[in-house]
Amino acid sequence: MYKHVFLDLDDTLWDFHGNACLSLKDVFDLQNLQNYFTDFEEFFSVYVKKNSELWVQYGKGEITQEYLIAERFRYPLAKMGLNDEKLAEEIGNQYLDLLPTKTCLMPHARETLNYLSAKYPLTLVSNGFTEVQFRKLRSSDIEHYFSHIVLSEFANALKPDKKIFDYALQLNGAKPDETVMIGDNYETDIIGAQNAGIDQIYFPLQFPAEIPLCTHIIRSLEEVKDILT
Image 1: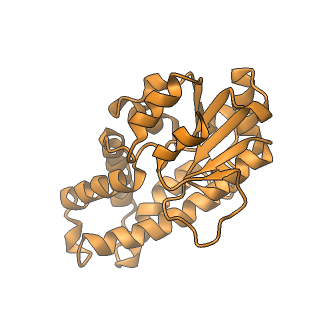
Image 2: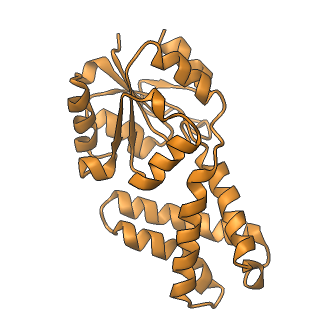
């Protein structure tokens, strides 16, 4: 039924949450942030909430990449009474340097890539920052699985914008009805693919009580083999 498979990267293949936690803990220790926060868990919870909000704004085109990078660390520091933009910038740079060196993948990610790459041309479709995403792929040794890598900066569009999916289809010479998108984020991956007329395999980090509108939904990447036989 399908001839092309599109995949998201963060929290679909590459364990973003786990790798981000490890990187932020490194930064927390290196910058002695225990002087400002009760513990790492307090810093991490404030950061994660603000970072998620900023990514939603970025996806809607309401803020720039530069603002996102600066604000997600300026805000936690300011919340603790420390208004130090230079420190926030230093932390941000350190985090972006450490993050892509982490190599934890989602369970069954490599086996799934081995299986799919033997049957289909694979295309990565991601909103992540170009340099960071390529370093993640190379550090975790999964870049070679992909025929094409489509990042938002290449397509001048962010998921769920139809344009980034159209760009990926054009690169592959593919039609929407012969393509399927695998991703963890309902807003960006699933609705985005729907906007482009592409079938979807939804892989949520937390399985929902009510199944949302999607072509397929899975609890584990192992289940991809049952769909893409």
